[in-house]
Image 1 (tube, rainbow, N blue to C red):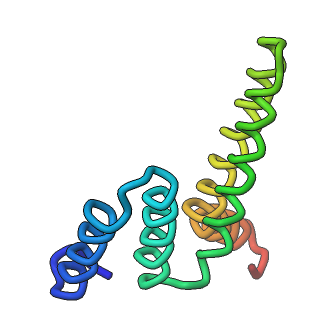
Image 2: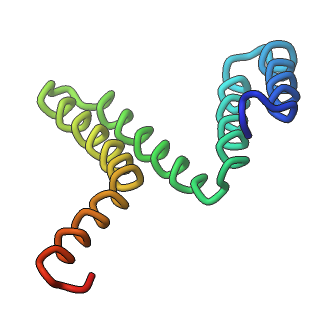
Length: 114
């Protein structure tokens, strides 16, 4: 779903209607936001929805562990774990193709068939 299409306009209007006027309490608004985000990203490529859900669940439990931890060092370790997980996901999906092509070009330049 692209931002400058009529489909996005109607999706946004329905979202604003539900978010602003139908759900008056905070908890349903959070669920509305979560479901709308998954629908929006799923309209682009639905195969990434489990990745988004998995990342969100991991961050939720890490945040719970941070909140329950009394030691400042443990909180920093949990934070670093969350950052590492999210940057790792980003690195794999953004730079994996570039790394594979670079290694293949390097191997081809020294005579290996990659």
